[in-house]
Image (cartoon, rainbow, N blue to C red; front, side, top):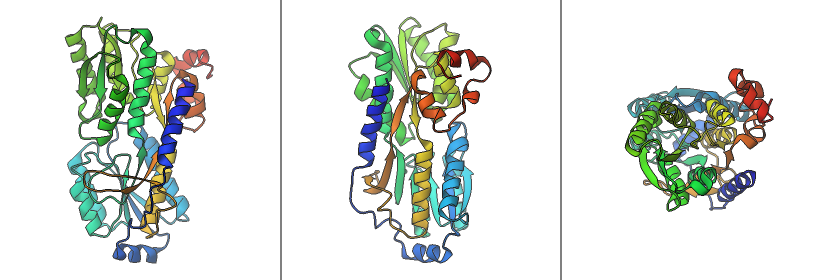
Length: 367
């Protein structure tokens, strides 16, 4: 599994390092440059995150972006933060507020990548460059950073196949994909299907509304009822939050030892991996992604080129060749928890091994 993880990381790194030409045109609105450059380091960065149910946004993304902006502006830069709580209309209002407050740059992780397009256009018309964070929002985006989302799906699919082994065709799997309004979810699904199609029988597949664990739980209950509890041999879950809802449904139905995938390396997910309730997650370096977003935002706010930051490009339905940085991912299993989430400071051993998880940590050599 470690060899597979290294291979995935290397593949994604190769993508992110592919030279794709100049990004000089980004953020070249003359008025924006003039007003930002006159401020020097005293810039205002608007940060808009999509929801607060997934632990990563408040625990990692927000503080890490704030830290990077401070670092790059001699502690003079200010981050103005808003969380949309999974409400696209509220996020549109938040963009309007940021425009009214005349921030120098926006970092936007869109609730709905299509619905946000009009708001992005408003920001650009006001001379405010926009960094699409984690999800490639539509509209006139200046820069984008995320993970190689197709590779994430492939990583999950490969792990599920490994867990199933010779039993891959002995029953049916359930696919619990993310929200249909999130472009990343479609890419995760694409990657997973490229690995799973033809090698497993997919009994049910769901696009889970708003990524909510309770919706995944309800979907899983429906799948168990439709397929029969003895027929389900594995579950593709697009993230850890949904995996929690899925596992609750499986337990309630008396289904044990069914491998369930995940993503985001949430603390609950890591603990479930240790106890064997969840098979794997996808470890994504939020520190690297957040630092890149902060670096892009500060450069754009100051009217500087992204040439030395963004070495590849991506295109949305509305905007072509957006300067892009893709961050590598790793398959997280019981075997490499210490070398990933602990080493990079996601969680301490004490946090992971608290209470009832102490014995599982000891068995895994993590105590």
